[in-house]
Image (cartoon, rainbow over the protein chains, first blue to last red):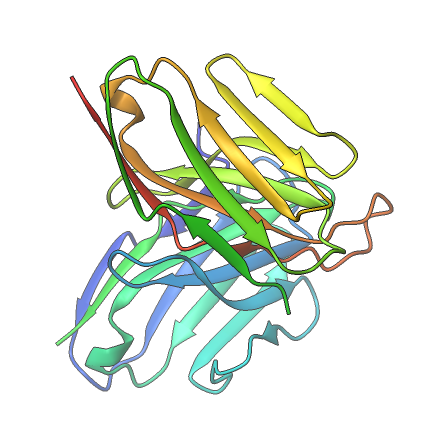
Length: 115
Length: 117
């Protein structure tokens, strides 16, 4: 069964709106969650690392004010794409990990389409 | 930072043949190397992983080899089946046994594997 639940699976919205994506760790308390973006036929690119109770660490080139990450509990992290534009359209995937020496488990992803 | 190169980008084989995908990494401190299989529009799924303290690991038809000196690792799939068709990603990260390491994954570019019946 799914270890990581991601919601919603698909979003279509107008340019300028904000979209929130939830990532829940179902089977364990995730001290760390990761957010990735994947463009069609490309690899997964890490956007940010989210540790429970602290500010997220963003990768170079990722705007922290545009991609707001909140990791308020050990089982939930959220990514909010603020004022989304067509170029933000992508497949967003989260992953969670209990300890750093254990594998990451991925959510089903969210396909975001901005019109 | 870490850089992972993956080859080939596409691989086409006949059912029953073997498939090999190769990756190289740049950071000699990387010590954890997972392989993920991703079907179209779905989540990446971990299929096998290897740590730097071993040179080879096998799980049924899937095996991974690691050459730390050359900084490359490979995925081997034997007796391929049509359901093996997917995109395969290698990745590398630094992990510590003590649980304090950052441990973020750097992915390769992916290999589209097609197994023809």
